[in-house]
Length: 88
Image (cartoon, rainbow, N blue to C red; front, top):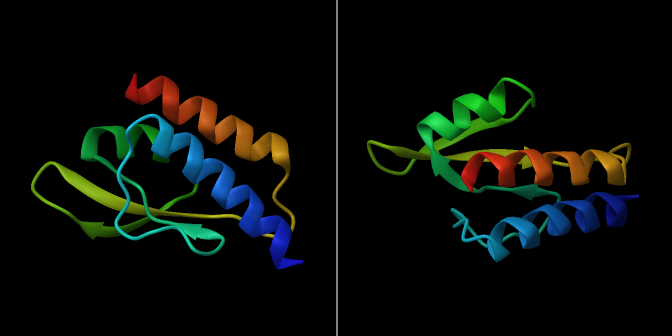
């Protein structure tokens, strides 16, 4: 059951890394902790349920994105697409 969630979390993490997003810690499970500007986080939160995790500096914070056994591939694709549109 967990393999599916981990696979999708890594898919999201890989897409973000390929586009220059840094992480608070190396992705190892179905939880990933990307770092974004606080303004970008506000925009992500308008559409997705993510958790504030840690302030990195005055302008940037890490959020937690978590996938589960019920997360669909198209959901992972959607958050990738939406986040990349915000950061480009």
